[in-house]
Length: 274
Length: 274
Image (cartoon, rainbow over all chains, first blue to last red; front, side):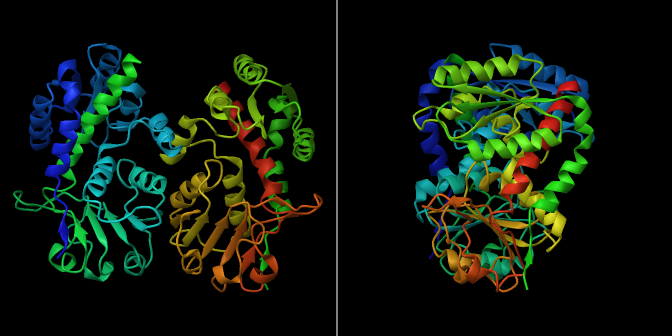
């Protein structure tokens, strides 16, 4: 029977650890596109903020210049302790140009190149929320020693796959990063002790891909066509019987990510008062 | 018969490409520890500098505070277009504290976290010289398509292994990084189409480690005890008969690295006049 690595107890432990934040009256600046439906995510963010006595300062923007101006304004505002750009924004906007304007010490999503560079050099204080959540889950359930483990990260995005690789390598795993151009993924993945999959495709990882007894972390959150059901990247019916531990979707990595975002806010604050 | 991927023609092609530098009268600031014997490297550097009409501005320092002061002074000096910290420095010195003071646009070794972060984000202009040399050699000899190749990087240093991983991944190879904690390296490496080895141990990579027909890049430069012979990390007698292509040591990667350093100086200059 596989261990189902639920996110809630991990998130609860992080919120517990973050209790000292409550007395600090921190404010997280959130910028979203006016017409975007970030509804679900925003409500989770609000609940977490309330739990930690963090104020959300939400700005809505309609034009790209408003976005960059707002990032600069919040960056300069000493009352704002962290800045979150809440995707999605219109595709034609140069998101990176905006995110580059976030001061590194307010960069709760760790998007700034200097934060990624510090992470790569093994001295990063801010780890992007999703890979940080994956590590927190693995540490909490302690289902495999990372040192020396053969780990496979599927997906190479800046927010997930790439920093995930860095974190796992720094924990002394032997890490491979697979992606859309990888040949013969099943042969690769079926050798891995740990598979972290972040490709955004329902039922992508099947029984062909996994080794008996492996640990599987499913970062996918795919909304199915009817709009009501969220599924991960793993074909759970096929994979769960084979593996020793797996994260569910929903209720897995996603539910820890928000907690990690607030942990980053706390770290940002500590950097600001240093 | 394996293709012996010598560095010289690759370096010559880079120097040819860099001819426009000659009219620019650039200066490279080099800082070395007074008592260090960087003799061999410095003479190679001088020859290359002469070839490109670059002036070397060499400073010797005896104390750590002199090092940081010198880095700051050269960083502020508009007559200095790039700064190279020529290792070795005394082990007890905080090398990183000094290298962090190099302005990112004079950072010919790409040591600054923002340069590494930009590289990780796929928009790095400056690539550390050694991985850049490896890519130049692979491109020059065109011995395997990198896209989809299974590549193994052995070693995870900031200057070589880590940026090598990033570069190969951005060329769409499927890349694994192995290191001292990796279990069963032979089974891993014998599946790789390309092995880049940078561990600093003579005869480390043997016939047990390689797949028939693989491409091997040897980044090691190990000076043997008698002080007169330099060998790589590959047991060449064992490995060469098995593989399709291999870089020699000496005369391989090392001889291209200096050319790549001057390429970075050129890129730094272009950044400064933008």
